Length: 166
Image 1 (cartoon, rainbow, N blue to C red):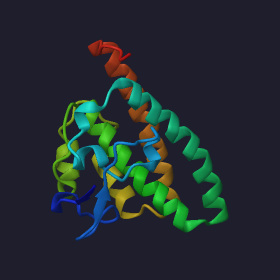
Image 2: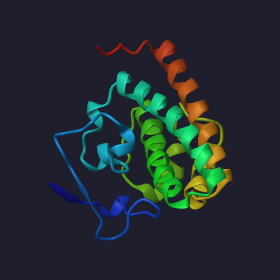
Image 3: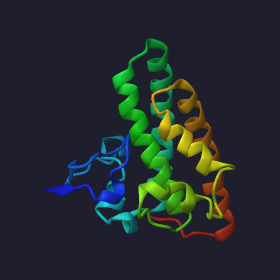
């Protein structure tokens, strides 16, 4: 089934006016294969659990090595696609860790700046990454943000004693 991307999610480089995403009951479990902001657009963010977040961090580490090579080879199209998806996934995880829902991509910085669990200067860094997602420096920043976010996730898990999913 196709869903029209809501106006609040129509922000470059992710979506533009008229874009749709396909929802499917068949998900192979790889975050990189999901459309950007899939769980928020389809209002399924409540289905996310600790196991999925850990899997996303692991998937990022695998893709990170591929992207490093692709920047050296100047494979721009693949880099653009991967960067868009992992920027979106980073943003989703940042919101999930703070028990928040993404309502509007146009005011990300305002929302993120209020979060308790966030990497230092994450709203400014994320805005830079979104604006320059095809550039190597944006990829470096995104890599650092993922590393910092993963540490914060485990710290929060220890401090808040989130129940482990089975």
